[in-house]
Image 1 (cartoon, helix red, strand yellow):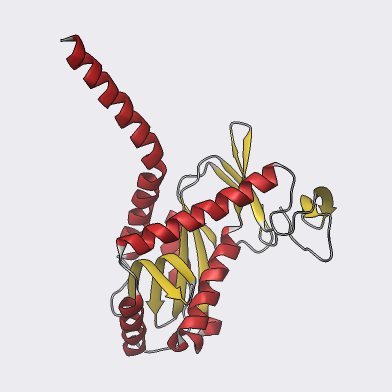
Image 2: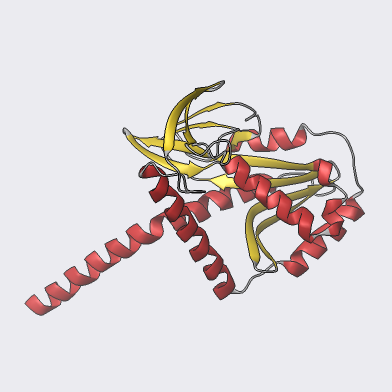
Length: 249
């Protein structure tokens, strides 16, 4: 009987550890499904929704949470499932997440989404000709508060997502063009599980490296010291090697 109890206790604690490790990914997937559900109510004769896409271009890869291809342009959507207060500026490389006084750095999601757009333009000529009609959007799902400065009108709560997309009214392509682009993207979408795991491991490693450097007061780009400065949008941390390095946090 004691052996059985011991086995059950070990299994319980192992399950708790596994759940703790997997919980952020589970919450992230649930958040993405919520956004996908919201997007599914867009009119099908004007919008095509693609979710969870991954592409490679040489040695580079990118993973995009949601793409909305419409007669009004292409919307590239990054979903963020952070909790706590989020402080940031559209022009700064890093934002701050504050949870009960504990502060963590996160890479500016606007920059992250711009990198997605640059990737799409570089890889797909069909998208390149609509480069001026690619719209980056960042959706926060459960943050307590967003305190942002600069050009952040495309950083939204989930309930603001559909009205923001519908606010774009200028027709730039036909629905046939939309289907053509969607077919090409689906053909290049990487669904292989190992490829996706490899991409995610690389992303997490790079993120951990950046955060460790910043928390140590070191510029993650060049290794210089991070110095507190005062700028147009308030206090920020800039690299001591400015202007050679223009990294900000």
